[in-house]
Each structure stands twice: as C-alpha cells, then as structure tokens.
Amino acid sequence: MATKVYIVFYSMYGHVEKLAKEIKKGASSVEGVEAKLWQVPETLPEEVLGKMSAPLKSDIPVISPNELAEADGILFGFPTRFGMMAAQFKAFIDATGGLWRTQQLAGKPAGIFYSTGSQGGGQETTPLTAITQLVHHGMIFVPIGYTFGAGMFEMENVKGGSPYGAGTYAGDGSRLPTELELEQAFHQGKYFASIAKKLKGSA
Image (cartoon, rainbow, N blue to C red; front, side, top):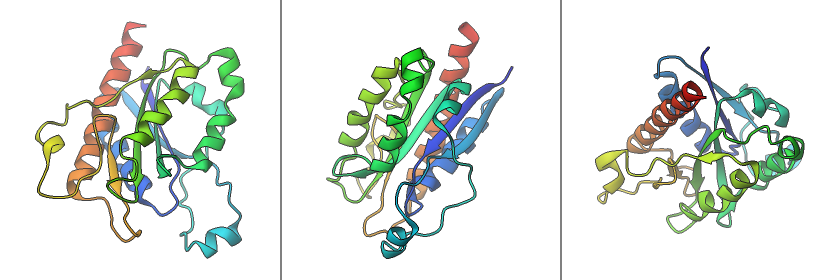
C-alpha cells in the first residue's frame, strides 16, 4: 500500500500555499508515496478578509480534523503571528481533541513549514512553539536538519527556512518565495516522505 503524506496548511496571501505545492512535488517524487494538499478552514468573515486585501482561497480541499488520522505522515504549514502559528491554524489544532483522546496521531511523523513577515519575525520561534502541539499528540517531529546542504548556509541573499523546516519571507506581501526557498521546500517534501515511507515499512 502507498504511504499517504498529507500537506495541511493555512495561507492568507498565498506564500505558504506556494511552499506547500512545492513540498507536494518533493513528496510525490518518492516512489510509493501519495501526497495530498489540504487547507484548514478559514475563521475570519469574508468582510474582514476583504478589508485585509486577502485573495480568494484556492480550490484545494478543506480538511476536517478527523481526516488527519488517514495519513501516514503530515506536514503542517502556516504563517506566523507574533512569532507563533496563525490563529486559524491553532483553531484547527484545537479541534483535534477527539484524536488526542484516542491518540490516533501517536507515532505518526510530522513536519513543519512556515512564512514570516521579516527576518526577526519568527523563522525559528514559529516552528519551535508549534512542536508542543505535536508532542501532545505523540507525533514524531521530523526536522530537515542540515540535509539541504549548501543551501542552508546561503549568506548573500535573504532566505527563509531553518533546520526546523522550509520557510519564506512575505515582507509587505509582495515578496514571493525565491527559487532557493522553493528548492528547500521540495527537498523537505522528498526527505519527509522518505522517512514516512521507512516508518510505515517497519511497522
């Protein structure tokens, strides 16, 4: 049976979604892996989103908490708000109490990717504070470490991401993920999928 990798994200302005799509490509490049994109429900009213100039959501399906249990491994992606995951994603995680009570996510590998507005905006605190959610579910955190190689040491140009996972900088919203950031996202997807496949094969 194929290893199911779910890439579950929240994206207000599209930056996290771009990373998610590249992560899916990376995960899908591993033989025997089925990768699927999901987005979490929006919690803000359309009127508020309009005032924030947020674009319309894509047609990527919206996931329900219980559907997480179907996956063999899950990559979670979100933008930061004051150095932590956005409230929309936290609300989704808060709705997984039923899965927590039955520990249906325990033992499943999990990864994290993210977007911040600035270099000091939470490229490490955002994934670091998100790990607590994984711990309570008994999930196995799979960071990329320095497996991305030379790209981890880029100093000439601004680059998001860290040993915790792939990342990008949104700036004022006009900055899009760079080629190097997208390459790191692809790498994370491929690396994570290979780990998820190994874990499933040894079960």
